[in-house]
Length: 367
Image 1 (tube, rainbow, N blue to C red):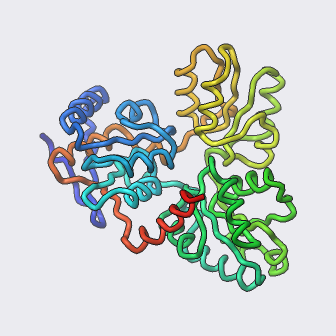
Image 2: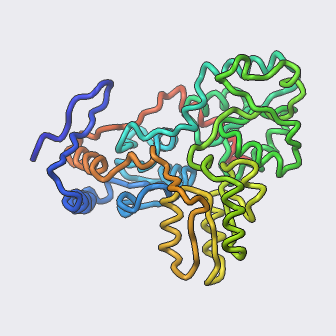
Image 3: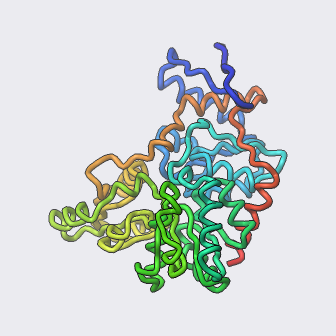
């Protein structure tokens, strides 16, 4: 067998890309090694993964569902076919005898990367100085372990796109102001649905001086939204909805709440990934859906329900490029390393960060 690894910076090893192996050979060996590993490995596949990867997943789901399965899994190795923050969450929920592996360490999340510690601390300090109101931090689960830990240490909670409303309602029972990380659109859409006016919300942009806000604006605001967004869901527009309605007036437009306010308001339905799946599955045969979310999931839904007309709201390929970094050759290297009992690309969150993060997660679960 050819050399499997090459040295890389840090404590990790990266797989050599064996170009002489055909794609078919890679897939065949993946099946063989997965069978050989048996119960030692549990492969978690996010809905946005390509079919090349998802075929090897023992469990498919969104980030929270997969984290729950990671917590329940008894396997020695948890291979998370997703992005970095998801693997971090899985590591925090698994035992010390288990290893969480991310096939490509470069599979990050641009939205999670938009919230860095220096800016977070500045925002927190400015908000505290602007008002004597109690500020409750809430973070979308799609964020770094570092941000989860900050929220946990400051009396806040984690939320998902499914339970954001319940968590925000809880936050307003704890204090007068909400500081919502890192996705401004989920925060805005959820708060507006709850009756909070757009004029009561401001956006804190860490790239601008003092977040681009005056002390008076921070003082008056009921909701402070961090300037973060999903690059995939940012690609959907109200104009696309208008075009669909003109061409196919009987089509239901269903979008994810990470889409902009204008898109969510113009859509027929909006909800989490699980909500989208449930709505399409329950719809009558012959139904038509224009879906505003990642293209791999949309295409898979179209394959799963051939009796329904399911297509992407956008005419362009709204692909999560960081999720797409998890490719079969990288997964193969992960499998080979486990067979040799020398796992690569193991994700390990420091114990102190885990302890603080779990405070925020446990508050969410209690809610």
